[in-house]
Length: 295
Image (cartoon, rainbow, N blue to C red):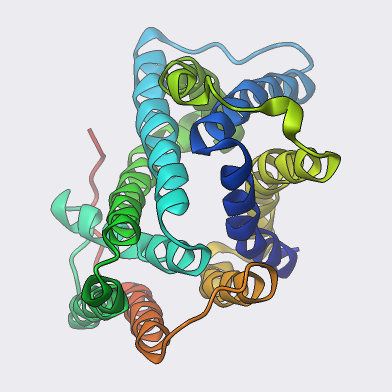
């Protein structure tokens, strides 16, 4: 299941690029947040037998904040970043997420960084600079801007991951995911509407509608649930390294399906990025954790 998810998520970068070319990123974002809340309600109704979890006012406010950060901002920036960048570049840049998580944990005083973690962070940052160097040298400012947008998106998701942990421990992962999705849907839809106004929905082919369903239902919604199950069965420590397979899969699919080509500088930069992220994660096994809670 974990390997299947790696393939699904790796291929999804090229699938989204194809959909963006047909209807634009705003229209895709609109469709995603018209469908995802409905799926969230159905999942909650099925799991609770129509007895939806009761949430305090304080928790509602926290869930709204998580929804704004994790969905409206993170997913919105990821969507536009992928649109401006390439499938392979997007997968590599988003892979630096664990580095931001580590830095946030250090900033909040939850974890002290070991020498290996510091080295991993510096190596990953150097890799990102190498990875972007060919675009900067060629003056491809749109693609470079897309990569920088993805860096911000990765940092936002890392913050969401850390901030959501206390709520997940109290309310459960599915409850937090579903309620935050529902609360984030309205602001996301309002932001996407102006850009989606000119989308030619009638021109979409059956194959493109199928790609839309795959990207939203299978990759985004069901993929998240399946990954949670995999982590529960095998443990996070054993499944986390599989995430390093996503960029190679994304690159292979982009090369086959879209004809994307990669320079040696780009390949070397990607290898350095993934090596830095891996070193930072390996180093965390010996790092000392300090009890604390995210505000």
